Image (tube, rainbow, N blue to C red; front, side, top):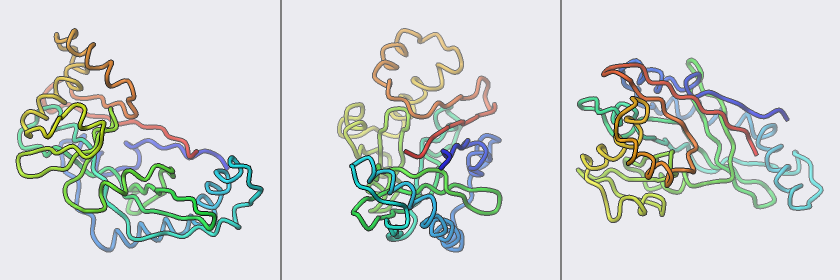
Length: 235
């Protein structure tokens, strides 16, 4: 099966609106149902092939249909760090919608998270991964989001940004205030794009962020353009 490649700027309408200075619309129950239907349509193709490939890597001689993948539960809304919050735009929320995720299980005991992104008026399967972190951290609900540059997950609680995993606890300790968190991400991610003078600090902190999975190009001027681009394979 050919690898799925995608660009977030091409399929996430919420982020396109964000780049232009707008806000992403809330996900309606009808949209959640439509997204689940798209994931269900992938059960006999993408999901079956994905699970079969994992089992062959474990030495099992199986073909896709034998995996009998099934979706589990409902789609979860996954949030991510808001580029406008990073840039210091007044009133910008710390997080914005990134994608939906839903769990899928195989007959042989494998598990996967299926990512669904907006595609025009509908949804498309963006990515399938064996990492279920986005499902586990969002299972309890609430304002949960990731800082993808370091793989950190947080929960917003009033004026606090609470760490949910080790990557977040390393940098946050018990918590950040929202203001302290904004100052941190602005220093780390906005100054680099804007050619700021704090190069020494950035060089030290960028070393701890070496596991970057998503590059954010932030505004060079207030109200400027934000672009996201992210290429992933299904493995």
